[in-house]
Length: 344
Image (cartoon, rainbow, N blue to C red):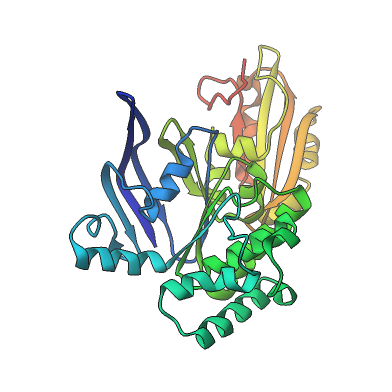
């Protein structure tokens, strides 16, 4: 549904050049919720604004629903009209709501429909339908100043859906909200994704957002995507930074007299007594250094950091036993295994 290829954005100001995007290749499948995560300055917002060409890329291409948007940019009046039509099928939700304070809630939702030339009757019907969809049917005549932050964001989402978009872009849509309101907005986005078949691309710096609603994710650093894939693929990838961030665990890497292992459980394996089976089968004492279990992308996932007595070479068979159970196994600090962030 969304593809960027070699996407580059360079900002020029006061004789300086800043590269916000450095050859980004992104692939978002139809109907999925895709999260892009990274620290401030990583290039996330520039990426999402280039997807709908609010920012014109310096180089590279952006294709949405099979249409190359970059080919329409700056190519005369006809191409400009086609670009506006393409943009109307891409909804955008902003961090700070961007509602017009002088308009009622219903009028805010109707604004895109006015631009599209819809009649007053069509606008009213559609706006009320969308407000009902986001749970604000009783707030149609209210003004933004009378709403809470979560309600304002629901209005922003309803407005973004006014043009019946195939794609919904969310630029830090929950970062200004409290945790409980954030959960409700994320649940709404997931419901809309399922009910309407929307493809959702969301930008965030919060790992809990990815954990709550995303099917796939990408990690951005310094204008580049350094890691991407479905959440289940990332959790099964040795040394994945995203997987480690989803389930941060304490404990140092392996030493001469011990072996430290990260075990990732998914689906049914998350409820199996694998560690106790390991202890009984090989008659070894196992120390649990840390553990976490949660639902990620609708899948129950757990991670556990355990310590086995003795060097890695002495524990090849027990580690092999864990792998035979279909678990993702990472031995920290061993030269033939991935060295995770924080390993000594």
